[in-house]
Amino acid sequence: MNSLLVSPATTWNRIEHEDMKVKDWIEPSYGVCSDDFDVVITGVPLSRSSISASAASEYPEYFRKSWNYFTTYSIDENVDFRALRVADLGDVKLHGTNILQCHENIEQAMTYVLKGNPNSFYVQIGGDHSITAPIVRAFAKVSGKRVGILQFDTHLDLRATDSDGPTNGTPIRQLLDGGVVRGEDVYNIGLHGFYNAPSLIRAADHYGVNRITLKDFRRQGAAAVIADVMQQLAEKVDLVYVTVDMDVLDIAYAPGVPASTPGGMRTDELFDLLHEVGKYEIVHGMDFVCLDPHRDTSELQTVKAGAYAFLTMMVSRFVHLK
Figure 1 (cartoon, rainbow, N blue to C red):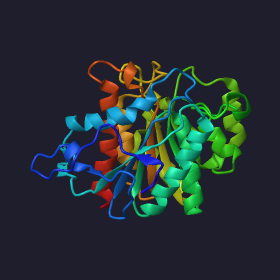
Figure 2: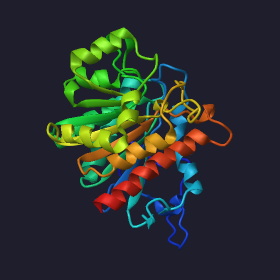
Figure 3: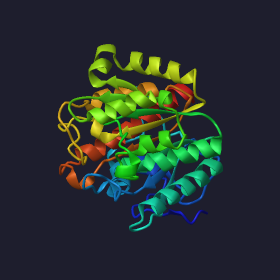
């Protein structure tokens, strides 16, 4: 058992029955790794590093509570995916104030998870987007392989670290400046509107970051865009990590994010993209970040959208890779 992984406040027991809900399906394995699992989930409740005021640290808890709303049967695919073995490893234990120590804890905890579950698919529930940097560092160190990043985001997250620090505005820049990933191996889908300053565009050009705007995505469609991106990545990298910043969604669909904006993606578009992503074995892990339940509606529409996105990825992998 790893001391950096702690039991969450909300816990469930796996109960096998005909009409299983997600809360009955996911197995508790808090702090304990096992190579028996197809998928392992880790909560990363950090939001002190958010540029905008955020309670994204609360999302792992709300994510677990939302399991009661969903079953293990997908009517779209006409399949029950309960045979997919999924474990909840608990939450990363974080420092109360020291962001750098939090990032160190995340990297160490993920190193433990990756080594203890070498054949699993890894899902991290944030937390703000700063968590992606230490997670990907762990992936690169443990695997010793070239890592590509598929990013769904309204923002480039390429702010300069010397002026902005280890925040949710700098995770991709941290990885590029640290030599952990190459700019040509980063693909950002969903950029739109008036939310990226010229200095960030210059940074993207400098590093060679690939950008697919929301407008371009809509012209091509999810299947064509993901097929093209995955083909390019497969020619360069050994594994792909997917990071989903929930602010890629339009404010009408996701009010519960700190940097909510008009003009963004619809939920069905994000689900379609993740369904396509789930088909590719080169994708080894992902995170969902920047979802603040305290900003959400009383119906928890953003919380539920995040859980739905996760389940979409799970059923896609079950159908196409099992």
